Length: 321
Image 1 (cartoon, helix red, strand yellow):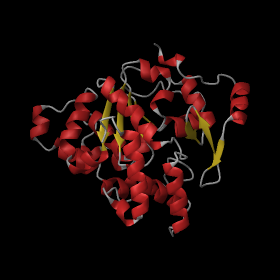
Image 2 (image 1 turned 90 degrees about the vertical axis):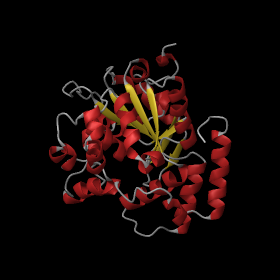
Image 3 (image 1 turned 30 degrees about the horizontal axis):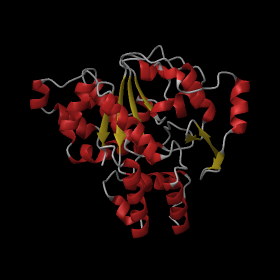
């Protein structure tokens, strides 16, 4: 069955307005409304619908997908470096001067936010894009063509904490108040977050990676952090840019790991404070610690117990745990 028949997307302004007025709403931390659309929450409904209606995927496209604050920026840098290593040696890489989100644009929140019908014809193949949109709601051309999807999954504890601290830093709120942590924790567990529920988002891509492994590659953030080289080899093979034996024996993979390290990416962001991918967010805000297990410094035992129970219930039988 063609995937376009499974999801209804409004086609006209009148239809979009009518839909918008009928959708359940929730205020996000920045005061902007979120809309419950196609089973998930979104802040930028208009640009999301434009993305669904107008984007046409190419067979050679590569998509970096994830829940928010799951390692998206890092994976964008790694995939960009892998796909462009023949064009740019590490010493001349655009990653030394550009944020990964500039080189791998986020479609629903940036590209289609700026223009409902952007001209993407000048982008060289393979085109690299990012999206947080859940799998069922992706444009049909992404699901129905031979393009590749790489999904990065991060454990829910670190994802939750990283998300909260990111939103707090964007609002320049330096002190994490206990009541704010409690409020955000409840919203996360109840699925009332952008592109949430988290577990539905993860399972959508996980199941596709099992059913269509040639189409969707599922990467775990913790595995990538612990031992990058074998996972980068797998990514390179998946996107059709495998490392040669000479590259594997040499320092090419190590060079990519170093080029895309959090420290290097953060240095680039802080060295040019005037450059912004999003007008309201300093580029350096996209980088914090990037470590595994930092959640232990923030979540209470009762929070950990509740989230563990929730994930056991949701992921049980999926093979993910």
